[in-house]
Length: 229
Image (tube, rainbow, N blue to C red):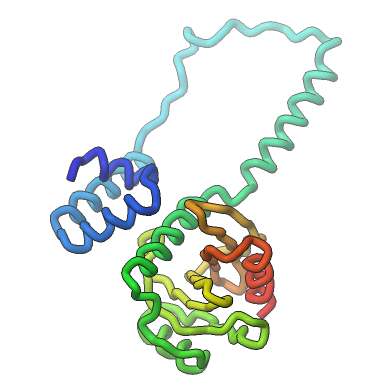
């Protein structure tokens, strides 16, 4: 296993299939997993502790007095750019890596044929089972009357933490709902990754990431039903 592949996995540059293969190898090879963890810790330490310094004054351009007749349009342009940048930065881009890892977890469970650890359509069975295995108690909704029956749940790992994975079905389509604690509310957002549709939102102190090959409209309807519970 080349270090380049570990770096590519850390930077989320591998596709879903390659990521699943690498995760399977790491699960079977403690030394490989340790190498990845060292790379991940080093990357995090660099981001958190690296010093940043302003450029010396000799490299800055000499100050010029602005022309008064240019101030009004220049200010308007800066304001417009600032508003656009604010909207861009307000988007939940930090959730994108989570969505990518959720898709990988969905693919991994599907390929392994291990979608559920507790096969049950009873929310009163699934919720206690998850609560005893996680440091939080995830909500479990019964959506069978809406055409999305619960088939069970498992404990999975996304973004370096244990999450609840509720498994629903729509006809022959599997829907994975990954639930973990969230620090703040987040509006619904949609995406498509590696042939799968992804819906995500945060409410009631929980983050929901929904992954399925179900069509976008039906998955959006499912997400709205889940958010309303």
